[in-house]
Amino acid sequence: MKQLMYFAISLILVLSYASAQTETKEQSKDKTKIKEAVREQAQNQGAENQIQNKERIKEQNQEQKAVKNQVRNQESIREQQGNEVSKEARKINEAVKEQVQNVKEAAKDDIPNKGQVSGEAQKINEAVKEQVRTKEAVKEKIKTQNRNFIDKDGDGVCDNNADTKAQTKSKKGKAFGPGDGTGNKGIGPKDGTGFGATKGTAGTGSCDGTGPKGYRGGRK
Image (cartoon, rainbow, N blue to C red; front, side, top):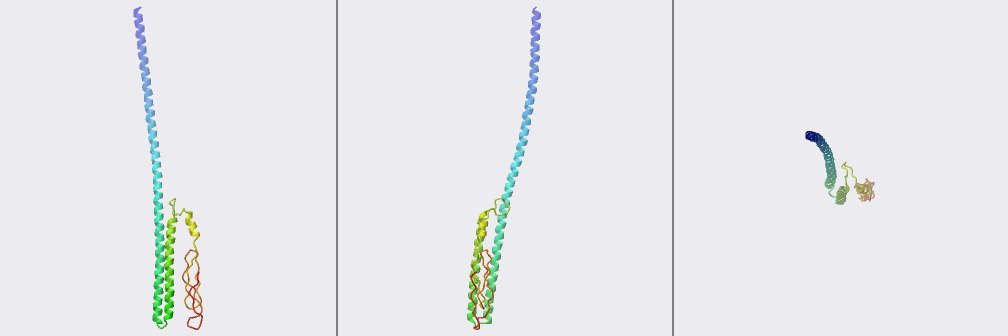
């Protein structure tokens, strides 16, 4: 009877050990699966982070490119405006030189006629003053354009409505067009951009005592 009890107890112990070993193997498999799942999730998260980083870097590069384009466009516009001012200044200087040379030639050809030379000199002085005013107006206009120029998207096109309004409200020129001293007063055309021409149309008649005297150019 005792042997039977010992056998039964031994059998129970063997079965319990076998069951414990089976559970341990299953738990080990579960742990392995969990580790693999965690590793796979970490890999997926790392790949997703890399994609997000690439997209973020791409957006930053695009923003930097847009800023660089905007800076280049503004520098190009300023350079172009500076060239326009230089061209206007050269034209004014050439016109002044030509007028001074004409006065000198007139003085050489007709020295006794001091009144005519004086009249020509006065016209030149008036023309020079007008050209200086025009030059200053050009500078002021460019300053206004630079202040109003806002390129928000870097495409080189002004995105500020104030600049458009400022251009459309440009006043007509108020300059005088000097006559040539030989007839009726000159009429200078308006160009609608705020800068009137300084040259009048040729008059008719003469100023040698046989016809009506020439007048100064008319207001535009």
